Image (cartoon, rainbow over all chains, first blue to last red; front, side):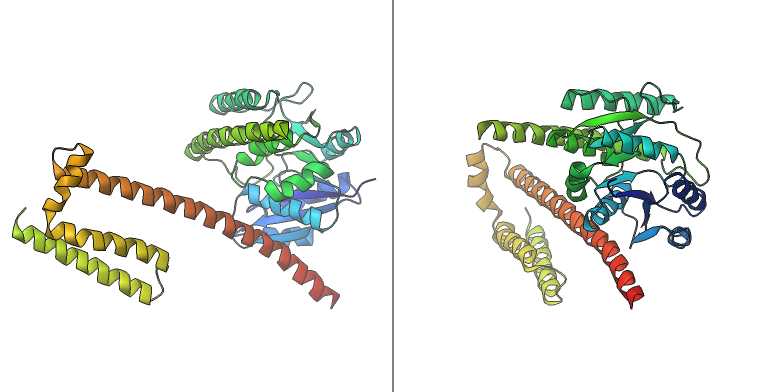
Length: 242
Length: 117
């Protein structure tokens, strides 16, 4: 079986990490776990190390995109062929890791753990966020012609091709790290699938999203999608022309 | 424009020139930016002294009131400067981000090497 690495971006997650890590190690025996400490002010790094994870410490808070990119970079450097990225707060069920990896076995190169695909347990979001997510779905569909039920999932499995691609080009900004990353992979062309997953309640700690910031993040993302879409068009014409 | 205003503009311009030169000397300002602001100052000194120099320029641009032409040009120029700065800032942010990410990876590598002993 291909060597896989689990990547957990973590910012001030000392409360949730021990449970998340012990569950992960129990559910995925023999798999390596790297915790990317995104400039936490608490004992995230120490807790992760004690639980047996490899720890990468960013010198200051760079945001989840950078944390994931650092993890992907590490995976490529160390010769892993696959990586799974999930949240450190325990919302993602470690049992689903195997299902995402199975999707890679079936020929996909990127598997998205989808909260809204048929067969997932569903996920309750407020009306504002639901509308914003709907808008993103529509935008992504307009830009790429493909429909994804869950465009902002934080639970992904990367095959060799998307791993190598995104280790270099993973977008750093919040939200862009999922939607824009998805566009980058789709442009490159490997097979992308959605796998239904079931979300759980946050175990401990605080959700990192604030209302006003979220609105700004969504607006910025629209600009990012438009930019990525225009690059996409240019690349296609170049390829056609050659 | 009164003589007093002339003197004020000249004094302010010269003060800016002195300030820029001091910043360059203290290595607080890259010389490419210093050059930009010094060029602006050199342009402003004759304009401040002889405002009527503006008239033909304003006429050519089709602006009746010369000071308006001046303000418009100044605004446009400042806009370009700000866009340029945000671009520089974006580039710097990307670079410092990459450096920080590399640092995390290197730190890990050093820890490993030290553990190997």
